[in-house]
Amino acid sequence: MISEVSGFLWKQLLPDTFTKFFDIVGSPFVNPGMFWILTPVIIIWVIIEMYFARYVREELEYESALDNSLFLLFVGVDLVRRLAFEKLLFVDTLRNIIVFFVIILALVLAYLDFFHVLKRKISSRVNSKFVISFIAYLGIILTYSDILAERSFYNYGVTLVALLMFFMLLKFIIKSIRLFEPKKVDEVDEVLKDVETDLEQAVHKMKEKEKDSSSKKKT
Image (cartoon, rainbow, N blue to C red; front, side):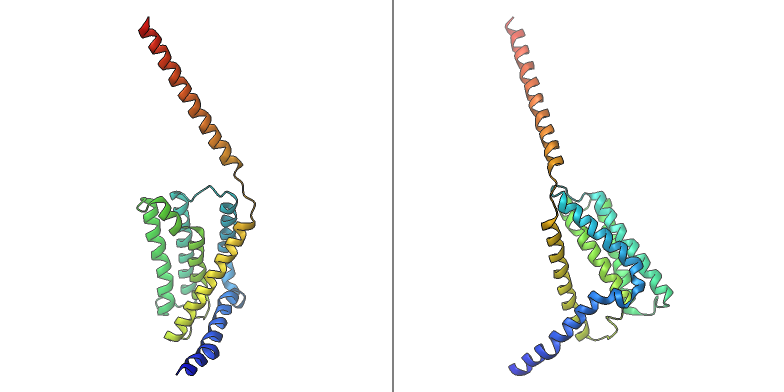
């Protein structure tokens, strides 16, 4: 029993998982049509990650989170266009589920951001450029390619594991970018110093007013 399980693990599951992983990574080169929508996703993704790696004290605000949600909605609309162009709209069930999941998720996130339903820290994590871009990337790949052409639970499971591997790889790349990107904190330090100076001046003025009022009372 143990030998059969280990044989299945080493001879079938792991090779199939790594094959699926390389299918996910190399999918844009096999299906060059997705580059039209995938290229801006990757470019914006990298630039934003480099920005927050450089300005480490800045955080994602509600308006930026809303921008990310609308960005995901734009990707979802393009995926609908793709399905309609390939005559798969309301025909290919799995692809339609993926596409409309992306659209519904984008609309829900946009609603939460617009009305400030979530706390700012939670919203910044849920709507981070990494999360939104990763979902957009997966939606594009799974819609344009035939990675899920084999409709079986085994293929879905292998694909899920491969996606987790891909997620960890991207996390490693992003952390590497943040590690080597030069940090810029001078501007923030200047602002903090200005605030500190203003507070000191305000306290000094209050003390002077108190002295004046006390001296007037004595006279």
